[in-house]
Image (tube, rainbow, N blue to C red; front, side, top):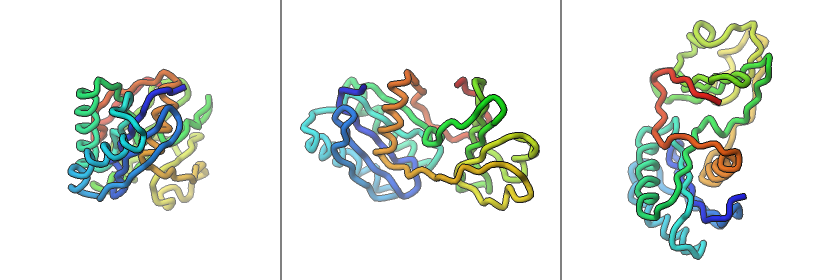
Length: 214
């Protein structure tokens, strides 16, 4: 159970920057920011306004989306979170865009989450298996079946992609695309806190493959 004031920052998504504040696990308010470079100038005044609505002088916990996503947005969000945390002596909770997709693996089934990289004609991906290291990186559509999976494997796909990539296969598709805003960031952060999950506060760009323990 979260009993402290929690401020969440969502600047990694394209054109959907927002901030939200919670009193414990109770939602107080959310505000949306302009997309692009204006986000950085609007962010701190928006934080002040949200704190006033919550009747708080500072946030005890700051949750921030570290990507993958907008290169500039990720940097703005992490820099703001670190600066505020230093000044307030607050805890930072880092989450990833991949955290919005529930784990659907089992002993026989893998899960592949694909996020549109918006550049290079490919995807940022997270390949999950039950109770083992999972893998993150960048992949082109042509290499999905050459490097990541076998079409005969049991795999659930989810995320942002053209379904034509998987035509002529029997692979499962989880069709729900989560709505990502600061409220959603806070909810995932609370879930991770309660589960004892703590991630590094660092930008996730994923042009190289990394292995991460579950």
